[in-house]
Every structure is written in C-alpha cells, then in structure tokens.
Image (cartoon, rainbow, N blue to C red):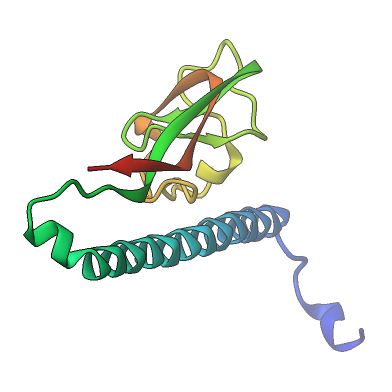
Length: 147
C-alpha cells in the first residue's frame, strides 16, 4: 500500500473499457465454442452420409431408388415481447439481453461498445448489419430424407 501511495489514481473509464472488453471476449469464446461443436456435428453427418453411400453402392450402381437421411439447417422463428437485434447477413437473432430502444437509430448492444464486430455472428458482422426484430430466429438441425 505504501508503494502505491504516490501513484496517481486509476482512471475509471479504463476499468469500464476492461470490463466491456472482457464481456465481449466471453461472448466471442462462447460463440466460437458453439461453432466448433456445430462443425464437428457437420463433419459427423458427412461421415454418416458417406458410410450410407458406401453400404448402398450396389443399389446406387444398379440405378435403384436410394434414400438416405441427412441433417439440414433450418431457421426456427418464435415471437418475442421486446425488440432485439438480428443480423441481416447471418439471419439470426444475436443478442437477447440488450433491448433495442425505440428512439435508437442503431443497436445499443453493449457488445459493440468497443468497436468490435458481433461475437454471435459467424462472420463477425459489424453493427451496421444489424436490424430490429421481434422474433427469436435460430438455426436448428432437422433430419430430412433425401433421394
């Protein structure tokens, strides 16, 4: 304590910036972990499809009917009571924490405070790509039969 007595006090704005940066990094890590899991699931789905093709090769070569199941991404839409932000490019609702005020022209989400792109978007999309939405838009995996 005695050593720090002669140093000037810390700037509270710097503390706020550090907290905002930490919040952004947490969101970015969470979104990246989800994308990694999704990528492994896609890889596994492709492996299963290749296995089905391999086991049905004789029927396929004989020009017979061949059906298989494949996981496909579709959009699921649910109504929300408040106005939140969605990305026009990615077509998903990004943040369900920060409500978009009616008087605000652009998103007021705290994840954009440090000037970074959206951590929830796979493309790290900028603030300008986000629009108002009253729907929770998520990507879900559905198993479909294909011929």
